[in-house]
Image 1: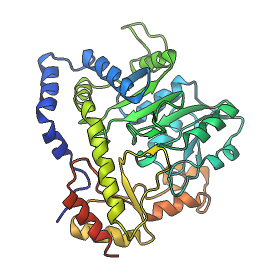
Image 2: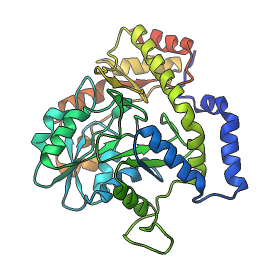
Image 3: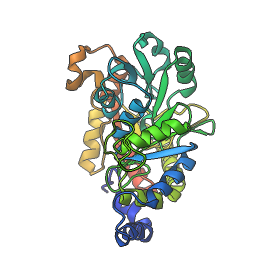
Image 4: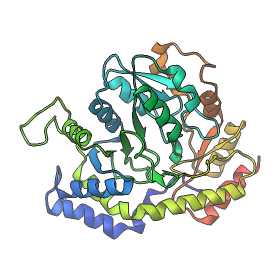
Amino acid sequence: MSVPYADLTAQYLSIKSEIDKAIQDCIDQTAFIGGSVIKEFEEDFAQYAGANFCVGCANGTDAIEIALKALGVGPGDEVLVPALTWISTAGAVNNIGAEPVFVDVLEDQRTIDPALIEAKITDRTKAIIPVHLYGLPARMSEIMQIANKHGLKVIEDSAQAHGAEIDGKRIGSFGQIATYSFYPGKNLGAYGDAGGITTNDEELAKTCKMITNHGQLKKHNHQIIGRNSRLDTIQAAILKAKLPHLGEWTEKRIAHAKKYFQLLSAVKTPAIPEGYKHVFHVFAIQSQTRDEVKELLDQAGVGNAVHYPNPLPLVPSYAYKGHQSGEFPVSEKLCAEILSIPMFAEMTETQIEEVASIINQL
């Protein structure tokens, strides 16, 4: 039995009437740029994320760049980022003129290793971007202690972790600012590119809003140099329709993960620290025979993906930094052993059992 890696059609069909109405309302009102639905979604998502403010933008990468710029990070500055993450986290730092500095990760949790952070801090370091990778929060208590000690800003890259928590506190509410992607495959996904920024700081929120809209809060009143990174109205309408369902979808993902934990015996499964709520954007298994596992799944028609094949310090775009194999041993090991297997709210128990039975053939 084939099993897709994700099934966005199944999700759409489960709330088809709500999505169709949200889109049709935008068309009927010819509300294509701006409109009340954007403000409504921003307010709803801020409340969901446990923040005072949310600013929508065009995508998750823009969200990081805008957050960095709003915090005053720029040319000559350094920003600490994990060696294992999607390239947007580091690329956004380059794109605002600063320099990413890579830090290795914890093997069991796959997030930035707090014990390695201080050794990377210099007099040029301005910020840290912990990534809540795969849906598991980074070690925010330790990270915030280090950041406060050294006067560093913290931008939480929450693109993969909508609704994740530490001791009942939502991620995105620990640092000065948090960024989100609403890419279609995310736990809360639009039907195209979309992103968001949350913060409890009103002035920071205003600055982010100005940056997203050509440096203005009112038309033709350009206070700063900004850009065009507005949240599309139809995407905001879709996200607003989906948001009330996110809690239920998250609980289903967690239930599916528990089933995987019970069934999988041939591979290492994700570790979850006590008090941490993992929302399983990705269910990543680990095996020294990863390529054999992948081949078994491919042959059976079961969707899978490698997230990520190389640590960021060793990808060609960062060759200029001169990093060598062996400098980031944990990230390098994970990149050789990690494999993401099907995980979506609409999965059936039969599908989960099929995936597990194939993997357990090893």
